[in-house]
Length: 263
Image (tube, rainbow, N blue to C red):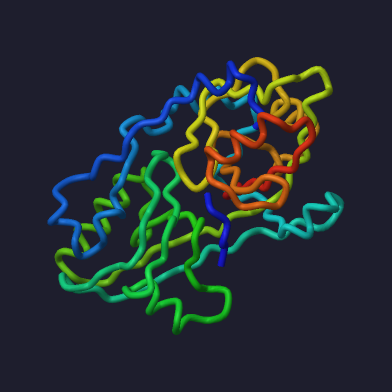
């Protein structure tokens, strides 16, 4: 299971962060069967306009693309292996608890932030085949075969949990890679236009016209570009929160970022 919690920026970069509180989605009492925290959502999710603005930064497609293990990313000539989805299938009742916390801060990226020791997901993890367990940073892509925006999928889960019945959730594991960033190549800042850091990762909402991350993206393979759907979870091999990554990167010229993409 992923145990990671989840740069430099110039002073100008750090002043541009847009971070909002996480209001509860809907009536809390309605969410008891699924965990109230499942529906925590930023009041300003990533919009289509922000995603288009950052497209030049290498935002990756949601459709099928290759996946690399962390060891394989060290040699870009290795064969690419597509990531296989994980299909969780359970029968639920109004008394059931799903036992997960979902990060809903992005309208197009709904990921697991906590798997609790009790609940339907943990019961699935204890009995499923090897490699089919649901882990932190797994991305929810479909509910009962339907692919939708984050809030719509959560609404479907809430409805199924309240009425009882068959629940099929499709998840995609992340594809990790390490981006080696150098700020001395004429790019003295990361080039972040806006970002979200008050979580267990650093998420980019937009890029400036130039910067060290864009410099990386210009030469990186498609599956190793840092974009709007990417999540930076570690700095120089150390898992950190988004705020800690920003703070430590401010004093570094050379760094290695552990990044997650989903394909």
